[in-house]
Amino acid sequence: MSVRRVMGAEVEYGISVSGQPTANPMVASSQVVNAYASATVRARRARWDFEEESPLRDARGFDMSRQVADQSQLTDEDLGLANVILTNGARLYVDHAHPEYSSPEVTNPLDLVRWDKAGELVMLDATRRAATLPGEPQILLYKNNTDNKGASYGAHENYLMSRATPFADIVRHLTPFFVSRQVVCGAGRVGLRQDGHDHGFQISQRADFFEVEVGLETTLKRPIINTRDEPHADPERHRRLHVIIGDANLAEMSTYLKAGTTALVLAMIEDRFLDRDLSVEGPVSALKKVSHDPTCRALITVGDGRKMTAVQLQMEYLELSRKYCEDRYGSDIDEQTADVLSRWESVLTRLERDPAECARELDWVAKLKLLQRYRDRDGLDWDAPVLHLIDLQYADIRPEKGLYHRLVRLGQIDRLLDDETVEQAMHEPPTDTRAYFRGQCLSRYPEQVAAASWDSVIFDLPGRESLQRVPTTDPLRGTREHVGELLDNSPTAQALVAALTH
Amino acid sequence: MPQEHKHPKKSSDEVEEVEASPSTDAADRKEALDDDVDAILDEIDDVLETNAEDFVKSFIQKGGE
Figure 1 (cartoon, chains in turn red, orange):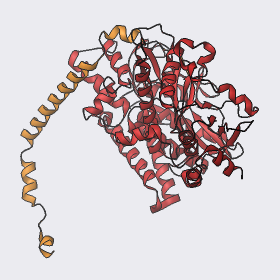
Figure 2 (cartoon, rainbow over the protein chains, first blue to last red; figure 1 turned 180 degrees about the horizontal axis):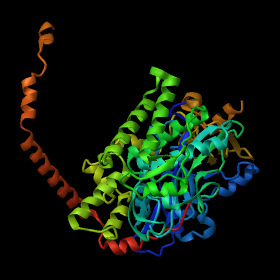
Figure 3 (cartoon, each protein chain N blue to C red; figure 1 turned 180 degrees about the vertical axis):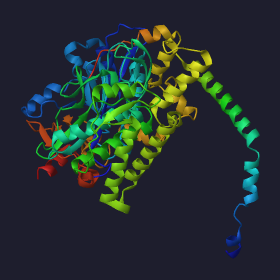
Figure 4 (cartoon, rainbow over the protein chains, first blue to last red; figure 1 turned 90 degrees about the vertical axis):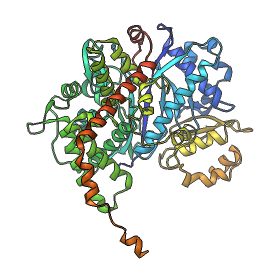
């Protein structure tokens, strides 16, 4: 494979209520999700199908009347239910104390950027809708990963992989890649250590929160390689690699290269192409060492004792990827894979020369450049509150206040997609995965979809005593090519289910 | 058609001319960039939240994931 593979992104947003620092973040998160759901999800609100194996009638338990969305009625029990599926195939819900957007399944890095950016617009729309309720204060969302006081929340990626690949191979080859890829996809952070106690700038939001090499946890003793194994597909054939080490990116190029280069490395692992030992000595401390050095000169020890920078280690992966693609595809290489390789090379070459040259593309460099300008103009040390504010406000998702957005508007940051393409993805699913079937069912038959999840759509049809569950086990079925005609020929959910069970 | 074919490429003289006056060019560009930086910081100043210290302090999150 190339950069093409089934993948997705799951982002938890930082949340605060304007002027109310002690507001309950679970209530605020529910208000955001419910405001969006009430306004945009037509008629019945399809629920997330948690218990796919349980008797079908149980799924009715998740089908609440819309009155529950009334904020005054929210209880702890109800809060767990702020959980909806959108017509673009994404899931919008409350995870712990944060609103989360899980993108629909896509097949390539550019689509990942598109539906991830669409998630930012969904969140923005949700906060605006929540603010229109009388007496409700403004809820602010941030696409970042830490409050700089000890708490961190995730921006996870998931990649569908072959079950045949030994997990030990993944750990061995992916760990050095993850230690070093932050120089490309770090989001930048003012503050060192988990609680930000030490002053300075570092490349990654997340590096200081990782404590072990491999593990199942995501909230404590976070591991570089997470072993959570929920394939949401045929478990005999697939695993779904759950990547928790990434930063939440605003810059499209950062997200694009993050997903594209990771997909390439996974392809090489699956094809057993990696024969070189690139293991990093002490990966957990190396991760922090790399993050804490924005000059990208810090040396880490690799494989047989060679010392190199994280940029150089990334160049080893780049060189291997070039060889791999040449070997597998030659001149038949697909456009996007070629594009990822060339942009990756360009970025690494410039990072090696002077990281500042990547300020138009990479989040951490763009953020650092802005911070440096303030430091130069105002003679500020890294403990200056305004520098911490710039770090935080860079991730504010409002176009009028978010500094990432201001920098784009000022022509300082390059984009890969236009506004219209992203806005469209708020409502429309990708056409080449099962997200198409899920999203289309929701937009075509909103009254009849009782629940849905990654691997099913559940219908409640008039005249049928039990709910009808349509499994969507294969992420690459249920595409427009597969079911477009079927959907076009099914004016009602009854007709669709009849055709499917025929 | 043949006429179009004969269209000359940019003469090397022209190119040399551009390269012949680097000092003023570079100075102009530097000035433009400095203006740019000031303009950018002015714009960012305008949208920054007031009272940075309190604002940052009050951003307290629970862990997630």
